[in-house]
Image (tube, rainbow, N blue to C red; front, side, top):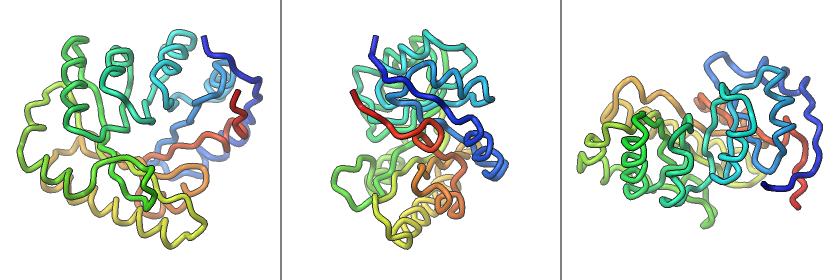
Length: 228
C-alpha cells in the first residue's frame, strides 16, 4: 500500500467550487497522491467523482473506499495496465492511440461491461504533453475502425492546455479543442459524445468559458501536494 502524508480537506472550498460551476459542468476531484482519508472527507462533503493518474493507486483506493464513488483514470495509461481498472473504472480520459482503444475493448468484453472513454488531444505547446494530433485522430476515425469497438463508448475529448500565465494562449487552445469537439460530434459520433474534459485548478474558469463540461481540480480542494 502506498504511503501518504496527512491532509485535511477544506470541504467549504469543495462546496463553493461546486456551487460556482455551471450546472452542466461536472467536477472531478483529482485525488492523486492524496490519502484515502482525504478522499473520504471530500466524499462525506458530497463529492462522488474522483480522478487518479496511476492505475495502482486507483485500484488501492477503489478497494478502500465506498463503492458508489465514480473513479476516473485521468493520467497516461499503458496498455498492460488496463486490465487492473477495467472491472470498475467509470471513465478513462487519457486515450491517445488506436492500440489503447483495442485493449480497452478487449478488457471491457472480458468484464461484460461498456467502458466510457475520452480521446486525449494534444493542444499544448509543450513537447511533454500527450495525445492525438487533430490530423492523426481524424485519419483514424475516417478508417471507421472505431465503429467495431462495441464495448467502448466514446464520450468526448480531453485536453491539457500549455502551462503558462498567458491567458490568451490558454483560451486559444481551449477554443480550438471545443471546435474539434463539436466537429467530431457532428461528423462521427452520436449524442453520447457529450463530454469535454478541460480545465484544472489554474485555468478552469477559462476552460468553462470556452465550453468545458468537466473540470479536473485537485490542489484547490485537497491542498498543495507533498510528494514523499
